[in-house]
Image (cartoon, rainbow over all chains, first blue to last red; front, top):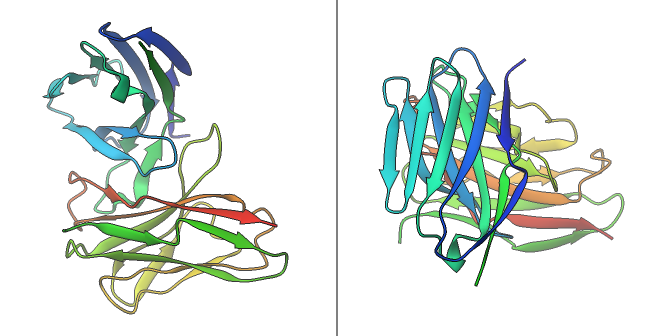
Length: 114
Length: 114
């Protein structure tokens, strides 16, 4: 069964600190892995998208890594800001021409405190 | 501004009523999707459409219906057959058939049964 597992479920950090969120997946066939940021009550916004051949991608203070061998990904946030408080969702595409094959994780809820 | 617009932001439904959620995009995307998000759960696919006048059931289509008469529009009707419709509904769009492009989300509609 295709699954995406994220950890931790929630995380509280102080402003200015770094943190790393984890994503493990069992999805076949694999097409790409995405990280989304979702503010409370809003739609998800894309942070990164990585294909099989990419093992790291950055978007400002966000850096995602992908290890296709171990089927693990991480999202590292550097110098956190209060506006980083949100849910971060890992999504894996199960391939094919349609994006109707996206498998969503349950998300990690990040709270950044002053 | 290019984007994807959902309306209304909040919607209340009485028992036995059908309600329709609107989703419009001006990104010229071929594919559009409807997802349901429940607290603590990953997004689940309700319906998707890859081309005008065609759509496919997702994982939880029972109690929902859609139409795709125009490329820009993909309305979702929540029928009285949906026994537990209270949830956050998200519409998304993407280029088709490339699976490695971004999916863009609307800001969501929160539906509550009263």
